[in-house]
Each structure stands twice: as structure tokens, then as C-alpha cells.
Amino acid sequence: MPAIIITLFIGFILGFAIAKLTTEKQTAIGKSTQTQISAKQENKDRIIAYLKVPLRSEYRATENKKINSITNNEVEKLIKVSDATATRYLDELEEEGKVEQIGEKGRFVKYRLK
Image (cartoon, rainbow, N blue to C red; front, side, top):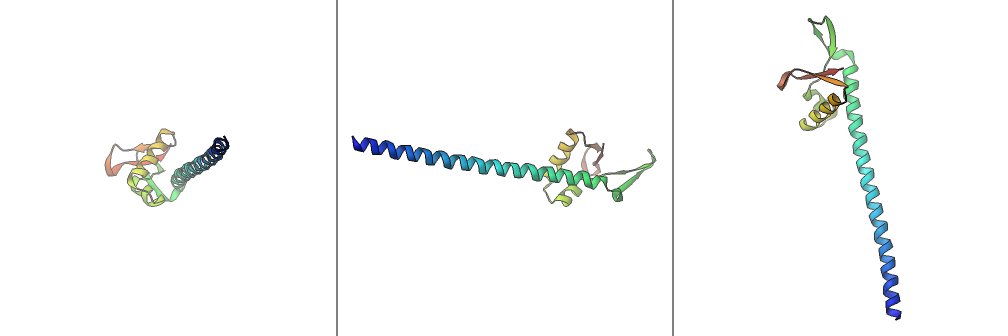
């Protein structure tokens, strides 16, 4: 009988220890995900800020005004990310309605503020 009580007691303590470790691990994962989300938003904000600076303007003769634009390669260099990540950021900004794509595809594609 005492062996059963001791076994139950040890099992109870181990159950609490495992539950605590699992909760701590999930909290750490949540913090990591939040950090990634914050970094992603900061990078997208840097792209928008880059587009707001008037030094990188190109003259549009048809519209008779200057516009700021950025390419995928410029985003790669600006925030030091891969080609795929730069494309993803620009696509997300376009879906959010913050930028619009100029050009169809390839090297001549640029993005500007909407």
C-alpha cells in the first residue's frame, strides 16, 4: 500500500514538472514568433520610409511629376534579406494597399507609394 501511495505521489510531481516545462517552452516559442513579426514589420516600415525620401525620384514625363520608386534588388540591399524575402515584403505591401507595382515582370519592375 505505501508503495502505491509513493508511486502516485512521484507521478503527481512529475506531471506538474512536465506541465511547467511545456508551458515555459510554449512561452519561449510565442516570444520568438513575436520577435519575428516585429522584425518583419520594422523591415516593411523601412521600405515605406525609403520611398518617402525624395532623393531617389525619377522624372515621369508623361505625368510631369517626380515619383519615388524602389526595386526588389534595392530592398534586398536596404534591409539585407534574400530575393525571396524582398519579393514577399513587396507583395505584402502591395496587398496592404501601401505600394503599387510599376511594370509587369523582370528587371523593369518597380514599386512606388500609392
